[in-house]
Image 1 (cartoon, rainbow, N blue to C red):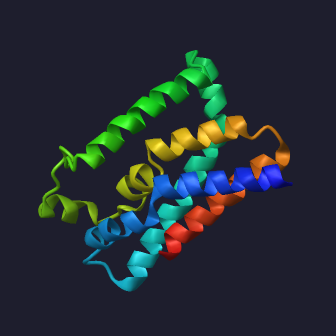
Image 2: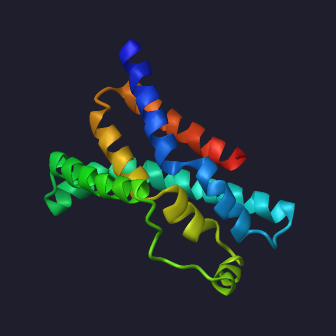
Length: 162
C-alpha cells in the first residue's frame, strides 16, 4: 500500500510539474481573450478531455510503439534525460523560445484551439507523454496502474478547473 501511494505521489508531482496548469493558464487566457466565458469553459473542457485520452492512449500503447520501432525503455530514459537537461539549462540561462507568435496569428487560431495547440502540445506535450510511458513501465502491478490513471485524471481535472 505504501509503495502504491509513493508511486501515486511520484506520478502526480511529475505530471503536474510537466503539464503545469498554472503556467498554461496565462497562455490560455491570451489565446481566448475574445471568447465569452461559456466558450472559454467549453474550450478548456474539450482540451482537458482530449489531453486526458491522448495521455491514456500513450500510457497504454507506449510500450508497443517502443517495441515496434526497436527502442528500449532505458535508451528512451537517457535521451529524455538529455533533452530535459538541455531544456533546464535554457531555462536557467533565461533563453527565450525561438518561436515568435504575432497577435494576428493568435487570432487566427481562436476559432478552435482546444485540440491544437491547447490539448496537444501544451497540455499533453512531449514531456508528459514521455513521463507517462516511463511511469507505465514502472507500474508493475494493477493498483499502480490504476493509481497512475487516477493521477492523470486529477491533473486533467485541475487543469480544467484552473
